[in-house]
Structures are given as structure tokens and as C-alpha cells.
Length: 293
Image (cartoon, rainbow, N blue to C red; front, side, top):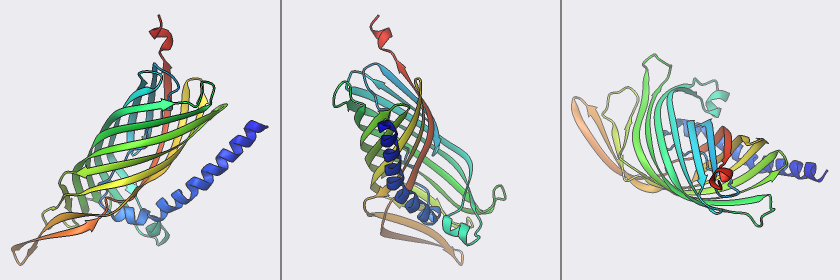
């Protein structure tokens, strides 16, 4: 009975905590839809190691297809690596546009990301079901997005090409209760962009170029896993919130009566708000018996 009560309370807390986040991301989707989609944060890494020589593997879908690997070097230290690939067509319509009967847009994406880092994990005591982790890492992200009003018609709306480096720190905690594992995490990240090329509707202009763009985000997330043997069937939900706006230089080139007009402005802008969602199948290999032989 106690276990059932704990589960019910945990689920209720998850709904209370994630509900506002879901609404916020959904209501902001109209704004996200209009942005250039140059910010592509991955889901948070939460292997929740318990001891040395554990190899945690995870295959998931969310912002494309991704694979996460994490290995516990000792009873407290771990290393991790992640890779994400997101290419092909996707359909997107903002919540407001859907309510008003607006048409969706279609995005052709060729986005890639690689990240890795070092972590420290611990438990309050050897018999505790609670686990804590902290990670630091870095990643390189490549963004190439082409937008049309109708898939395959060639009616161009916009395109974005850029890349950026990201540094981050993350703290997470989790708890196992029979066949369930619940976790919460928060990540703080710093992103520094290469030159960002953005082309507007109609293809009449050269791409505008944004220089000096960077940003910082805070990313809270909740995770739930159903446990079966060494497998985890996991879902994660959260959002990435920009902490402030920064000044970036944007150069636009337009044509008027056959003349090229170049305009350069410095504007304060944020990298943007983004939702975080991932479904994954995870498996943990226990290599301790092999290491002890």
C-alpha cells in the first residue's frame, strides 16, 4: 500500500510540475514556429549509474534519432557520449494557426549533433533507492533547415544554415520504486554560434548574416522509466528557457531598382525557447563480473 501511495504521489507531482511546462511550450509554439529554428537542444542525459563498470546504452527519438552511451569508470566517475541525426521532412503548425484554420509549413532538415563529457554520481548510502548525478560536457551542433509552404511544391519560405558550440552543466536525481524509475534534472548551457545564414521568402535576396550570436539557457526536465530486467522504457519531457537577450550584428542585402542595398544593424535577440521531448529504449550492461575475472 505504501508503494502505491508513493507512486500515486509521484505521478501527481509529475503532472503538476509538467503541466505548466506543457502549456507553456504549446502556447509558445506559434512563436517557435515563426523563428528560424537554429537552436536544437538535445534531451538531457540521465543514465543514473549505481556502481562501477556499468555501460548504459540508449536509443531514442525526439529531436531526430539519437544514441547515448555512458560508462561508469569507478563507483563515482562516468563518461558519456551522444549523437543525434535529424534529416528528412517534417510538418509543423503552431497551436494558434491550428485554432484559426491556418495551413502548416513543411521543413526539410539536415541537423546533426555530437556531445560528450564527464560525470560524478553517488547515493546517500549503499541501500538507498535514490541516485544523484552531475555532468559537465560540450557539444557541436550543425543546423540546415529549408522551409516550404507545401511539401515538394518548391514554394520557398525560408532557410537557415549555421552551427554552434555548446558547454553545459547538469544536475539530476532519480529514485527507483519497484518497476518504476522517476527522475528530475536541470541543465544550464552556454551556446556560441558560427555565422548564421538566413534567407527569406521568395529567394529574391542574398542570405542575411548574423554574427556574434550566443545565449544561455536553463533546461528543467522530468523523466519516467518502466523497468523490465535490464531494460528501461523511458519518456522525458521538459523545455529550454533563454535567460536573457544578447546583442548580435545582422547584415541584410536587398535589391531595389537593380541596386544592391546592404544594411547592418545590431539588435538584441535571444536564441529562443524550445521544447524537450524524448522516447527511448535503454539497456544497462553490468560488466562487473567480467572485470572481476
